[in-house]
Image (cartoon, rainbow, N blue to C red; front, side, top):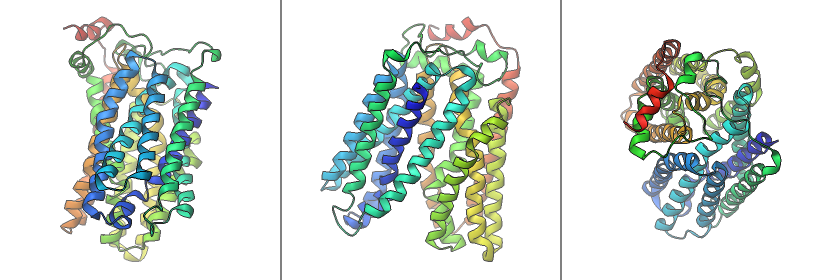
Length: 430
C-alpha cells in the first residue's frame, strides 16, 4: 500500500507541474511582455534551483527521515508555484521559478530512497516503472487540461495552472505523510544489488539506505562515492543519456523540427503525445520482458535505441515528404528506451552506493543529470542557430554511442572481482 501511495503522490505532483511547463515560457515572454531573455532566464533559474537542491535533498534523506525531506520539499514547491500567481514583476517571477525548481528536485532523491526502503528487492524495478509511468501520465493530463483553462491573452490567465501546481504538490505531500505512518508496518529494508541481478560483486559496494554507518562530511562522502569504479561509469552513463535525449526534449528537438524539417507546430505536440502513449502502453510489458537482465545491459540497450532514434531523425531531413511522420516516429522510439531507462538507473545507482550514502549518491547523480540537461538548450541554440542541423544530429549520435560504451564498461566492471566491503567504507575516513 505504501508503494501505491508513493506512485499516486508522484503522479499528482507531476500533474501539477504539467499544467505549468508547456506555458510558462510564452506567459513570461509574451503575455507579461518581459521578453524572451527573461523567459529563458526563468527556465535557467528553475534548472539552477534543481541543480542546487538535488544533492542537498539526497544528503538530508540519509541523515533524517526521507519522508520528512520529501514532504518538506513538496511544500516548498507548492509555495513556489503559488507565489507565481502574485508575481507582478520580473524579479518576483524569477524568484518563484527558482523556489519551484528547488522544491521539485529536492524531493526526488528522497522518494527514490523511500522506494528502496518500502519495497522488496524483486519488486523495485516494477515500482520505479509504475512511478515513471504515473509521472508521464500526470504530466500529459496536466498539460492537456491546462490547455482549456489557461488564457495567455490575459496577465492573470495562468493563475489556474499555478494554483493547480501548488495544490498538486500539497496533495502529494499529504499522501506521502499518510504512506509514512507507522501503522503500515516495518519497511523491508535495502539489500544492495539484489534487485538488479548485476552480479554478486555489487553487494560489496552497496549499502543500506536506512542504516547510515557514520556521519560523513560532504567531502568525505564525495570521496567515498567516486572511489567506486562502477559509480564512475554510471556517472558517465547518466550524463550521456541525459544529453542524448532529455536535454533536447523541450527545446532542441522542437527547434530542429521547426527550423530544419519545417513541420507544423501541431506535429511537435503530436510527437510529445505519442511519446507519452508509448511509455504508458509498453512500460510494464518491458519490465516483465527484461526482468532477468542486468541494469548495465539494459542501459546499453537504451543507448543503442536512442542512437537509432537520432538516425531516424537524420533520415527525416533527407525525405522532406516524410519529415512529419519520421519526427513523430522518432519520439516513439525514444519512448521505448525510456521504458528501460526509468526503472533501472536509480535502483542501479543506489545498489552501488556506499553504505549510508544512498540518498547522497542519488542526489548527486540527479544533479549531474539536471545540470547537463540544462546545457542542452544552449548547445541546440548555438548549433541550430548557425544552421548546422547535420552537426546537431551527429553530435547526439556520438553522445548516445558514448553511453553505450559506458554501459558496456560498467557491465564488465560489475562482473570483475571487487574489494571487500570494508575497503570502500574506509574511504569515508581516509
